[in-house]
Image 1 (cartoon, one colour):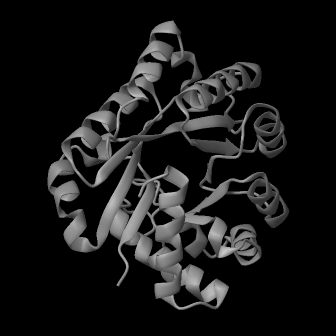
Image 2 (image 1 turned 90 degrees about the vertical axis):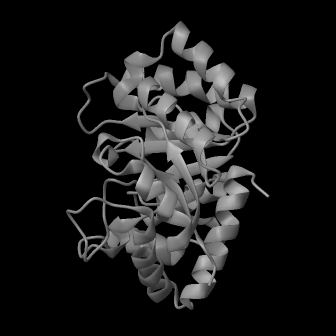
Length: 255
């Protein structure tokens, strides 16, 4: 059976403080051969890089989430520019726009997003995009400032928007939300997308799939997402596993 590649997880999160090393060490024996631990702030990006250095099957992405946009000062930019050169760093992220809470004004979010897109281009790294209630602005900025190398993480928009991002060259990240009873939009997007444009993720410790909703999410739980996606696409689970594995390697440009 093809192994799992969790393309987006946060094992640096405090939810894993009690058993992080034990959990990470056990992943290969549980069928999870590769993960990307994704930074969301300067502090979490530093932790993600540390984990990637320690574990052969752990890679990292480094970046500043829109809710942490005020982190991005000159010192932070300098650290990102240097650290993105590390071999185990496979992407810049997660970056983007989040208009749900608006603790950070949209204009500040846009400025920080565009700045990090420039860093990604300079470093020749794909990007991991966080976009919540900001579809039009996200698409507009990506068209103007990026080249389509990356993933729209935790996708939450319409099938039309999914196809638009895919046409621009981006992969669509799908996780536990696909298994929820109220996931009609995501199911429609998954139905419409070619399997070649889909990558699988947990966003752990968040968004555990049914029947584990409300519990801490970990990489082996992607098996539930595979099962649901296979049902939606009319494919065998092993076909979904194999294509998702290949897609993840293409996304992060790994052999």
